[in-house]
Image (cartoon, one colour):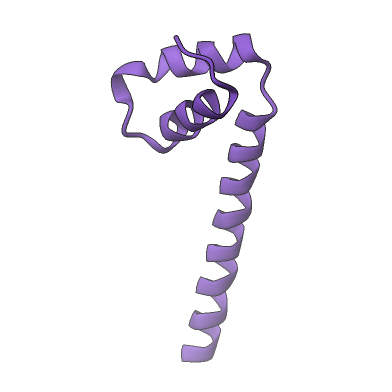
Length: 65
């Protein structure tokens, strides 16, 4: 029973990591205007994961709102 639970948890963690990587990749692939729109949407919730990805990518591209 424990082995099944550990395997299921590992599969769920792997799936979550794949989704997170897909989200990060999607943000990186946005055009500058779309990235600025996304950052503007999350401006007031800057501590969220999507906002952090967006602001990090903006800094890398040296663009700002």
